[in-house]
Image (cartoon, rainbow, N blue to C red; front, side, top):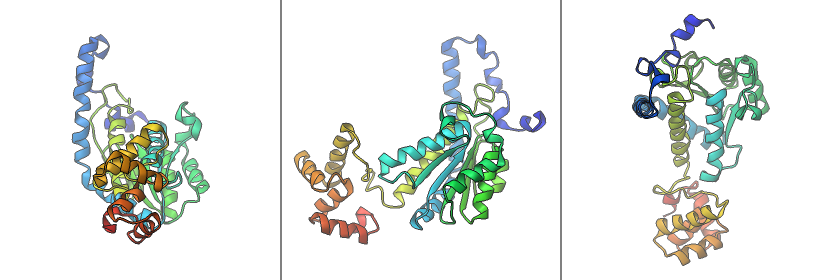
Length: 298
């Protein structure tokens, strides 16, 4: 694309408030950067109706046995990979349920892979390797809203009947034309011109947090405001698991620890055992009948 097209992008414009940035004191630069960052939640708030539609469709895909697949390049891709990876311990899902794919593969998580984001075909190729199907939800992430890798992925996803969403940080973004459920968040020009790992990256992280967390609530991974499907993969999480059981059931530490062990470290199962006064087998049946929602077992 030529410079004229780039000049239209909010993410590429110079921020007049940060002119003379290299001459500012550390204190002044920090204060100004903090002020700019405060614009991000306000910008995200304007997109809540669009984010809601993406979440509704993601929940539907999960209930059909489909996956949530993030596609992006550079910072956008890394944020997608990060959100997907964190769903595994937080919500106890298998790694195949929420997948983050970055242009250029794993190497691109730490080192830029030249030309990967400029290929329309690489996005399709990566989705083909995943065996994309019509039950899946594909969300393309691109701060510029014009990344060919993401556009190619979205077009392929639509061709196989998968649901599609997009997250961009420019209005009237090109990728929005290739997604059923586009999200466009405008945070204004970056603190450092064109550095979309800053406000744009923060906005994308906030939106991804919303999509994954609230989608998981929608399929029974949360009781009250507790993450009841957390996986106790280290000592800290073992203790957190016991506290969750205590808070969900109002039992003491020793009782929580006993049921945690009885349930073979399955927090949700332990909670249902206590709340319904059931043994492990009956509690498991209750959860199956309730589609995994603790509240429905009561």
